Length: 345
Image 1 (cartoon, one colour):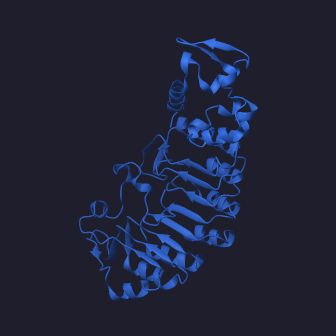
Image 2 (image 1 turned 45 degrees about the vertical axis):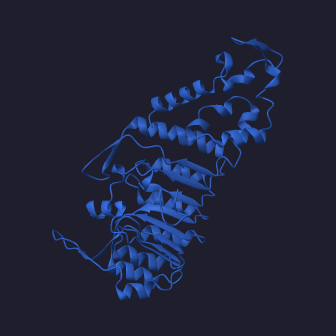
Image 3 (image 1 turned 180 degrees about the vertical axis):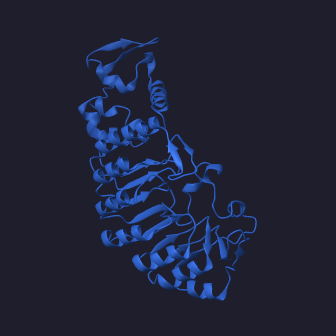
């Protein structure tokens, strides 16, 4: 989101907040408490509604209805009461940036995206203001799949969110291994992660196993190869919930997960392409989800979530995209859904 679009949104909210006489309620307490003013129809006594004297709990309730752009638009600078309300931990328990996207273009070489500098600048400013107001109380962080953080931004987040328990960050293109590992080391209380499929997951899962004793659920938005399955079994044996929806999964990888993760309770492979084999330049060979070996291995799960509807639009889209679903072409917000309630946004 650009500075211009953020400013436009703030200006629009100011216009919507204007009361009778064209006075913005955000700046209402700038008037002297004893003053009154004339509207087009009647005389209004300012002492009747003094926003500077409203109970802080009421202001917190109001601010809870604001999105992150509204919260960082300057309301904390109006007066001491508003700043106290704007810093309340309940407001910042979840920092939701799932509606913000980077301004970028795809490139053929690593990191495969180029992000406009003004986009980085706007995001950095937004993070600085919001994490300053949050005062380290953020427990959940949610990013859009087209919001591409850089190393400096992730390092800043890690330092200022020491109590983080849930991270939803589907785009890692611009992040280096060392920065990701440093962040995981700071998040001792991390319990849940939504991430992309990466070529070498071993370093990440090993870091989680060493530093996040309460880690229990994982969602991977991308293909499940045998290497990923082996790493899950080796480093996250206490994993309780795993979602691999809307992608392709090798049968061998699925069996490895079902047989190796002894503590797994819920596995979601809804809308997935189950593959027996897939050679380069050869058509994929689908596997049968009702295979006896799969059903036997999944019998110990509390929930084994699949989709068996032949006319399911999402399943058809996954097939059309050959297991690499293009979320940018899907309905807005569809990527946030999950059959596992604790992973759905």
